[in-house]
Image (cartoon, rainbow, N blue to C red; front, side, top):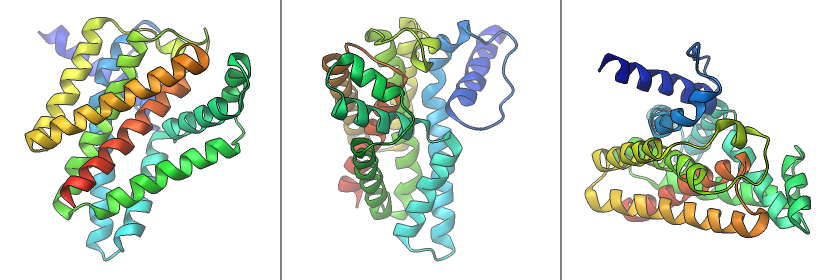
Length: 254
């Protein structure tokens, strides 16, 4: 039992070090074998990120900051906390899928660090949707909504990693490895439990459904465009899931 909980703690530390800019001490034997298993802890890290962002938003509202400005600053804090890694993935996918003529060109564009028109437009749409949704949430719903959105969105990553082929053999997506079925199931159960604990049952199930739909959509698109997934596709999946959950819950709860 002690070893079991130590394994989860090690995975949580490794996942936090990968998904955030926090200086989290890493287990001595974590890399590279532990990266795949640590994906089961992604929803827990996502929930903690959502909690931090929700508390920041609530604090800003508490000192009289207008809701739109508070939401914008909270989303900015989210990008700072994560290093904007998922936003970067979404932008790269937008540029690559929108601007590449064939698979090789799409992958080359996605590797390019420069931001193009398609990437900028996708980022703008994503940010505007999350901003307006967050600003419209009732005060009591801000923290639970963000916790659920971030937890569910990060659960999509191990699901895609386990079920989709890699589009290339290098990069973050390849180095993270393919998680075993047990790790994927654990991530899904943890994310679903967080949703059911934080939200009314119907809202939680709808949040799970829209996350699954978003993950399926990006998986199908990536399959058609580049024949598999990359780290950028994982980032895009997170952003799509997060945005979808925020917009859906804002529509229901506002």
